[in-house]
Structures are given as structure tokens and as C-alpha cells.
Length: 88
Image (tube, rainbow, N blue to C red; front, side, top):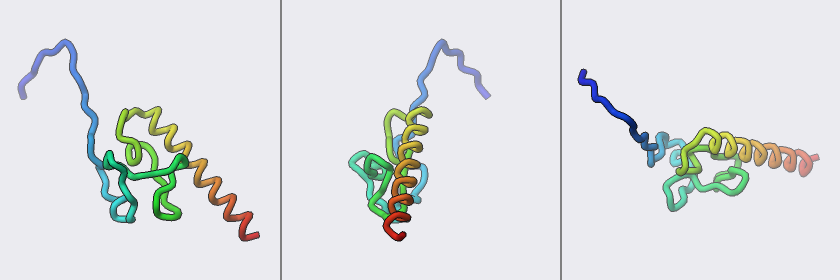
């Protein structure tokens, strides 16, 4: 193994989906190639939500993924609550 001395470097994020699960479920992708969602993480498939790197390509940051997960969680909660009220 060769050692390369450096004073700095860059780490590039992945620009493609690492999983095909969205495609397998029938989710639509947006123009950036990630799963298309509304503001609450809903996809075009009822009951399927996406967040983090699956729905936002840049910037790939933990804080953004956490925020996206929180928004999708709020969407799930809202949809389940609304469904419960509609069926009561």
C-alpha cells in the first residue's frame, strides 16, 4: 500500500441513488434523479414516504437528512391522524 502525503482534500458525495427501492415501489423521480416528494415526504404512492438522501440530492448533510426525516414523520403522523378521524 502506498502512502500519499496531503495537506487537504475533498470528499465528494454520491450523485446517484444507492438503492432501487423507490423505483421498485413505483415512486416517481424528480429531475435530479431522487424520489419526488411533497413538503411532507409523500411520494406518488399512497403510504410511501421518502426522506434524506433518497429525496434530496444536495447538499448531503446529516442535519438535512434528519430534518427531512422529521418532516416525513410529521406527514405520516398527519396522514394517520386524518385517516383515523375520517374512519371514526
